Length: 176
Image (tube, rainbow, N blue to C red; front, side):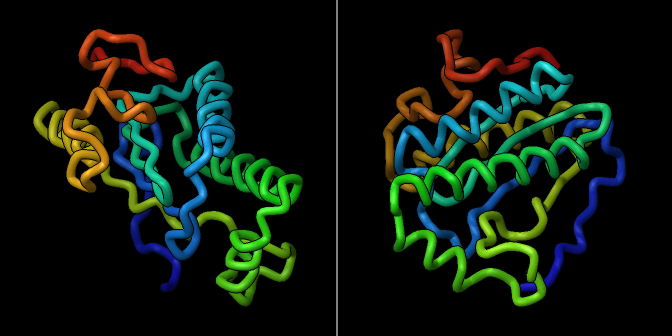
């Protein structure tokens, strides 16, 4: 698959984005790997990234995000998490996943041994309240549609609890 034709044209406005592990490899099956992703989001939140909704599944994650420079913040998120996750996998000798990340790496990426994320994030500009509600609902329903839980609030790695008035794992902006 080539580079995405989807672009963030208005980086200061909220967008629905999807980050996918290369070749849909299931990396987020351990709390440590999910925490690397969440820690990066927490850091970026302190620097002005607003997270409106999120979900992390075993091989991809969905977000509704907004910042003054969303394209740059997503690039920072992907770069830092890729380095940290590859370091974690190396330190814990998770050879099967590392071998896949090396095998499926794009040929032109000569500057690295592994590629963690698929290219692009398929950004969709949130155009109004109806679209915001639809994307947040889609995010929260994802684990249910996959058969992992019966109720969205039962999925640990999402913002569904925040929208139900319960404490979640990540600071979420529920007022939009």
